[in-house]
Image (cartoon, rainbow, N blue to C red; front, side, top):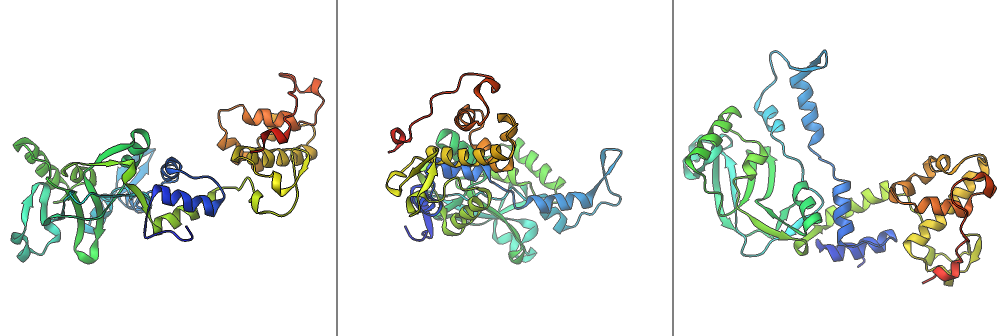
Length: 338
């Protein structure tokens, strides 16, 4: 696939990313990357607002006098976590309704809409929409269990359209009188508004499985840019190179360079380790692994003995000065070729 589609399944996205990065991608890797590199785009605004409302005195957070608390401040305080790269393609049978706060509707129009708990009004109801944004909690559950229930397709602050907008699945939750009273009290404390998690709890449930997950073109390109920014390539397109390279001490022709990703990592890692040891011949393995050049591999193979074994094969120190187990017989490269 030369270019991503407007919306891509995880398998389509994996094929495109594999082609663009030279690394093998699959559905699970995309979800894992989306979790690991998630950034709450609303966090900076919330932290800035918090610094305007509070100050530290002797290590204790104290509300400033008088506190800054306008409608705009409230909008920032109620900001939810931003959505992830991923979204879900919804079945046609799924129905959603749009809700807005009474406070964000012109007074002469408020009576046109159905009132719901917590100062919310149902603006329109039971429509089908193709996609739902996925937030961190839902993505983690899909990664762990393969499915999850979501109650909201999106949550956004739209000042140009009057304020907050929520898309909740129908039928929304049927509340007991006690629950209505509790939500109304919560809304009064928030000047007629509610935090995002309280609104989300009002929505109905829609089951989302991993097969329904995908990513639109814009977010797929953002994911690729994030990967390229944070990833240190461990092999430079070996199959595409026409030059002969030195791998594990042997000059290998292009026809024989069809190595697995782990073998490519090993070759690149050992080449760096040799160069670092040549400049620091007295270093032990632990010291070599502390160099910045090797940190991507340390992170990738954390908790394994892999790097220790790879270093053993290129350790220039005499065997009697290394300590630990005797050195293994070097692996013959030809036996590892696919």
